[in-house]
Amino acid sequence: MITPDNCPLTTYTTPMPVYKISEHALLQEVGDETVILNLESGEYFTLDDIGTRMLQLFRDEPDTHKVAVRISEEYEVNPEQAHTDLIDLLDKMVSHGLATQDET
Image 1 (cartoon, rainbow, N blue to C red):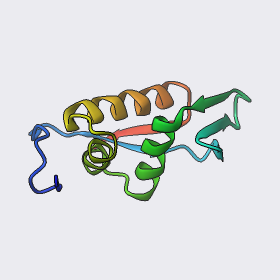
Image 2: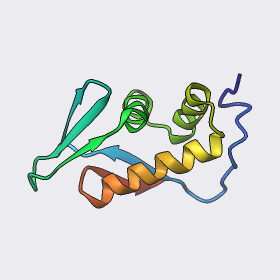
Image 3: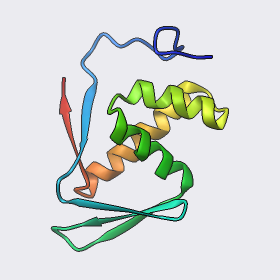
């Protein structure tokens, strides 16, 4: 079992971005998917079951490395790939005003 202590993810010496779900994002799970409404723009987006699971875990524990470890265990994917996919999702959410990103 992979834990945050023995996680094979790369250790970064530069600050990693910290992501937060925007207060302007309204999330609603519908079956295995999530619908996200940007309350400012009126645009809405959907996430598939894997994106939904990533977001569920991230909302419970907003640590991208820990989420990547959990995703890698649940979906039998490399933790580094899971981390890359999560960051891609969060970056897309930032670009649509659904999340914010700060440097630590």
